[in-house]
Length: 473
Image (tube, rainbow, N blue to C red; front, side, top):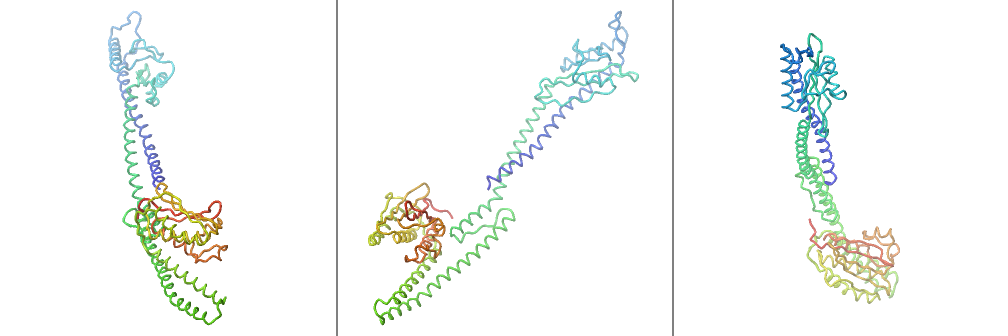
C-alpha cells in the first residue's frame, strides 16, 4: 500500500511546490527588472533636468555655444559620456525630429523600430514610457529602453532615452532562480521524508492488522493487534478487530470443546452397543446379513468419532516446529505403508534426494503423510502405482504424492479436503471424509500447506509444501 500511497503524496506535494515556485520565480524576475527600470527612470529624470534649458540648436557660426546654454550643453554631454563609460548604458537627448542634442557614445541614434522607438514616441506624448516587457534569462540580446520627456513651458522639447544591456539583470534573475530551485529541492526532500514517515505511521497499524488477519486465517487464533499507534480511526479498528478475534476464538473453542466432548461421550455408548451387537450375533445364524450390516455401520461410526477427536486435537494443539529431514521422513512413511500397498497389489515407491530439510512438526507431518498415502493406496486399483517424491525448491520443500486412481473432476477438486465431503463416485470406499481435513489442519498449524491437482495421465496429485525457514509469528 505504501508503494501506491507514497507516490501519490509526493506528486501532490510536488504540485504544491511547483504551484508556489513558478509565481515566486516570476515575481523575483519582475522585481529585479523593476529595480533596474526605477534606476533608469531616475537617470533619465536627472538628464532631463540638465537638458531642460538647453533648447536652442547650435548655429553654424557658433556651434559650441558661448553663452550659459552652451555651458549647460557641454555639461550634459560630459555627464552622458561619463554615464556611458561607467555603466555601459547608451544614453542621449534627442529633439522631436530625432536629431541628437547630446548622445553617448557619439553617433548613437534612436532605433526606428522596436522598444527604443516605442519609448521615444510615448515620451513625445508628454509622459514617461511604459515599462518594457519582462526580460528572461534566455533572452541574450534583450535590452531595456526607458524614455522621459524634456518639458519647457508646458511643451515637450526633447526626449531623454536610455538603452541598457540586460546581461547583469539576467544573471541576477538566474541566480535568484537557482536559489529558489535549491529551496524547492530541499523542501521536496523534506516533504518526501515527511511523507515516508507519515505513510509509515499511517500504514503501520494496517500492516500489523494484515499480519494478524493472516495469522488467524492460517490457524493462529491467538493473533492480536496492538492498538497503540497510528491515527485514532485505525486504533479503533484495531480494538474492534481484537474484540472480533476474541469472539471468534471463543466460538471456535466452544465448537472444538463440543465436538471433543460429544465424540468422547458417544464412544462409551457406542462401544456398549457394538458389544451387544456381537452378543446378539452369537444367537443368530452365522453370516446373517443384517447383523453384518449393523456391525459395519457401528464400526464406521466409531471411526468417524475417532476422526472427530483427531481433528479437534489437530486444530487445538500448537505445532512443535523444528528442522526436519523431510526426505528421510517421507522415505520412512513409504516403507511403513509398503506392506499395506503390497497386500492390495499396488506399487508404492519413493523418488527424490536422500536429504531435504524443512521446518515442520515431525509428528504432525508424519500423521498427515499417513492420511495422504492411505488415501492414495485406497483409491489406486491393482496394478496401479503410488509415487511419493520430495523436491527442494528455493524457500520450500515439496512432498508430492501421485496415485493412479480415478482422480477428481475440476468441481470436485474445489471441495476436496472439506470436512465430511466425499465424491459421490467413491461412496463405496470406506472412510469418514475427515482424513484430508485432519491432514490440512495438522500442516496449517506448522505453516505448511496442502494442495490438490489432477495427476497425468490419471489419478490425484497431492502436494505438501513445507517452509525451509522458520515461520514468523
